[in-house]
Image 1 (cartoon, rainbow, N blue to C red):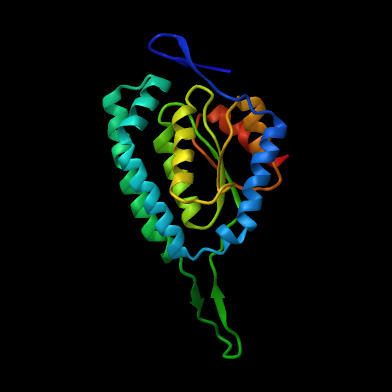
Image 2 (tube, rainbow, N blue to C red):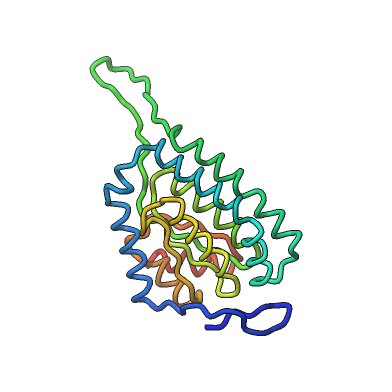
Length: 222
């Protein structure tokens, strides 16, 4: 489908309209990556280094990302520049949290028992992204999910997908294994619904309106 430049109301890019089969492939890729030693076998420190590298790449490409988002969703360039300039710091901050997801011990009355907690990744996370600040709203879902060892399938708005696709490309360039970060483009009632009701999706990170939220809740319950 065509992506329109809001300033000109003219097509400037074409994006895949993902169907249920495409969603299935994306989720299966995320699940396979989650189970792979290339990702699951990484230490928390190693995951943090990858996130820091991604933050560095965002800083190196910040003008391109800001221009891309402004063209795609019509936001003022000074606003997209401001938001993109924050992203490297956020990825660096989250990188520092990766090795600090610590468990704990619990005091018990019985001396022959020992209780403790362990934090483990959930698996495949679905990220539903609105049109108005796609890079920022992707980052606050993507970085924490990866820091904890999850994989993710991102579904950006059909009105503003280009910058999220570019961010996923940078994730690969940073050395994050294939399948860890996935992007599917398309429309909410088809692409989005197929993603949120998929049985392998263990968590949904959503930003959007109340009406769409109700659809997401219903779909995830199916």
